[in-house]
Every structure is written in C-alpha cells, then in structure tokens.
Amino acid sequence: MNVGILVIGDELTSGMTQDTNSSFAARELYVQWWRVSAVMTVGDDVSAIRGGLDYLLGISDALVVMGGLGPTADDITTACVAKAFGLGLYTDDTVLKQLKERFAKIHIPWTENNAKQALFPDGAVVIDNPAGTACGFFLERSGIPVTVMPGVPVEARNMLLEGVIPLFREKLGSRERVAKRAINIFRLSESKIDQELARENLNIPGVSIGFYPRFPQISVVVTSRGEDAARVEENLTRAEKKITNRLGHYIFGYDDDTMEGVVAALLTDRGLTLAVAESCTGGLIIDRLTDVPGSSLFLERGVVVYSNASKVDLLGVPASIIDKHGAVSEETAVLMAEGVRRLGGTDIGLATTGIAGPAGGTEEKPVGTVFVALSSGEGTICRRYQFRWKRRRIKEISAQIALDMLRRALTGGDILA
Image 1 (cartoon, helix red, strand yellow):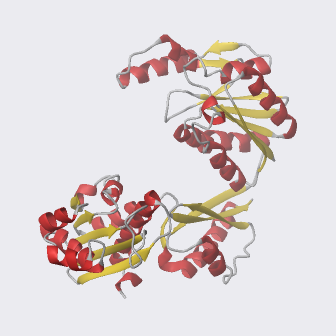
Image 2 (spheres, rainbow, N blue to C red; image 1 turned 135 degrees about the vertical axis):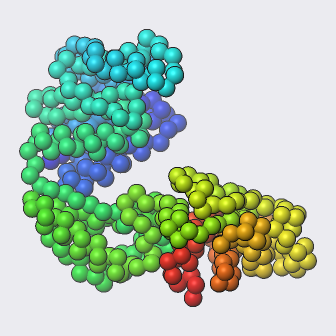
Image 3 (cartoon, one colour; image 1 turned 90 degrees about the horizontal axis):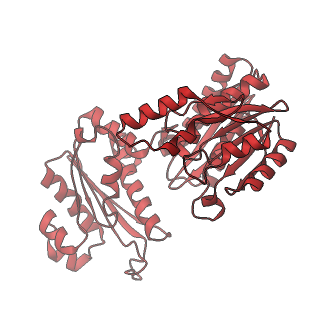
C-alpha cells in the first residue's frame, strides 16, 4: 500500500519550525510495511493545499494530512479539504460540548473562535484527540481513505498510532500482524553496531532491522511481520535475544526507556541515595533525573559548582589541588564526587568537570575534555573523555556519560573494571 503524507503550515514552509511529524509518520508507516509514496509540505494557502491533495491522491492508496486544525484564522485545513472534495461543513455538537467542558476544567476562558475546532466536512468521522483540543477526522475520496490530524507533534503522534493506523488496516483489509521493539544503545556508533550484528544470524522470516540515531543514543528497531500473531511475536523475541546477547551492556533500555528513567529505577529498587555535583554540565544531570516521577526517593541534592571558589567552598576541594592540577582534572573530579557525597550523606556521589568551549582549551586539555567521577562505599572511580562537538552537545553527551557510568556501576558493568 502507498501512503501519501501532506503536512500543512506556514511555520514549516518559512523554516521557523522544524517538521518532525512527517519523519515520525513515515517510520511508523514503514513498520506496517506500507510504502510512503511522497511527503509534501505546503503553507496555509488554499491553492497549495488543494494542489497537494490532488497530487497525493493521484499516487496514493491512503492519505495522511497533518496541521491547520486549530482555532485561529490561519487554520484553514478543514475548510480546504471540504472545498476540495465538494463537501459542506457541519458542527459536531458532541465535540463542541466536550471542547467547552475541557476549557472549563482547565480554567481557560472560552472564546467563540474555538468552536471552529468542532467543524467537520459532511460525512467525516471524528478521530478523538486525547492529548489536545482539536479532533481529527476521516473520510473517503474515490475509495481512498483520507485522515486529517492536528500538527502539534504529541497530538499527531498519538492519533497516528491509536487512530489512523488501525483505521487504515481496517479499511484496507490487511491481515498482516506487526510487532516491533526498539533496543536503545549508548556508547556504540551506528557502524560498530552494524558490524557487531553482522556476526549474528538475524535472517529470521518476516524480521527486519532498522537503525535510528537520536543523539546521544541509537535505537535498533526490530520489526516482525506475518499473518500468524504467535509466530510474529516468537520471531521478534528470537531477534531481540540475539541482539541483546551480542550488544550486552551497551543496551540501556527498550522502547520508551530513557537513561535517566533506567538509572532512577535502579537506585529506587536498591534503596540507594544520590548527590550530584556539576560543573561543565550546568545542571543537566539533575534536570534529567528530576524529570522522572518519584526522583525524591533517591535524589538528595544537586549542586552546580561552576567556579573554582564554589568547588572549594561547597565541596571542600582544596584550592591547592585546583592550582596544581586545574579545575578540569581527575584529581578535582574525584574530590568533587567525594565532596558532594559527604555533603549530602548519600550512598553515591556523581561529578562532572570539563571544557565545553569554544574557548578555554589547551594543548594538554583541548576543548571537549571532560572528567566524570563516581564515589561510593566501594571507592571512587574517574574517567577522562575527549569529545569533538560544539558546546551544547558536549554538555549533553557529558550528562549522558555520567548517567551511563552510574547505570553500569549499579548493574556491575565494565566501568568498575
């Protein structure tokens, strides 16, 4: 089956906003073994939308349209689709009532332009939007299923997975079953992962492997297809087991797992407490850990000790050590981890210090030099890293490295060697 994707919005054609919806949709459609015939992006313009619909309908068996369903004057998608298909518009009273109740519940004053989100082309079937106010809709044009969704990424993605794909499968009569698993990996390059997996026999019927880099990690997505649901799951499990055996401790989680979520679960399960001292990462580690619900169970404190004086005053790092070895050094990182652990009275202390650039590097310690240290009752370990990216990415990779060091320590990984 060929599926066309039409993304609508002046914010996209002007370059003010990056389109992430079409790439997400293409990936999810590919998982279903459906081919994307074309992806088009057009502005909030009647003729452009009409032209995009006409072209994609001519080369596709189904159509996904995203964007332009809000309450403002430039949200014209519903009206354009109705006009292109020669349909009138109607107000769905149930949707209108739900909209007003939702606004009242979250204490946002109702304005009449919001009623625009309850307008649909005649004959359209409403697609619920559990994550927002603008519902989507489905209709058919010359036997071709057309689905229209809002462009807000979290809303579009939920609706695609929960509403659109099942609808396409029902309308187009697909008997194929699909199962997938994302295996999340850190500290291995895409080429290295590919090289390692080449050593495994992954030639399993109906199974395909895809690589999806998302800095600073890579996800290997395993997809299993077939008409026998039990066999599809069995083949998925076989492939996953082979990959897990090959990549081992480089795998930190699956599907929607995050590094911080995995670390949080490990600390909570073991009843351990953590204190963090950050210099070059500027609070990124704490920010990520506190995104995890229940982080207060293990996270005692975090301090950003950016200046030399703060390292001395708050963590007790001797000024003589900094003078001799520098703020960016193994000696300082070790004392930072031990100092914050002592200060917080925690089981574990974690620390980062480095040169994020673009200035500040030397021949001995160039920009991108980072030290990460971890202190526990078993002693203190420290590792030096050299990164090649710009400032923001150096901060992000350093935070990920620190969390991964903690994960490996908690699971008996090779960081303790």
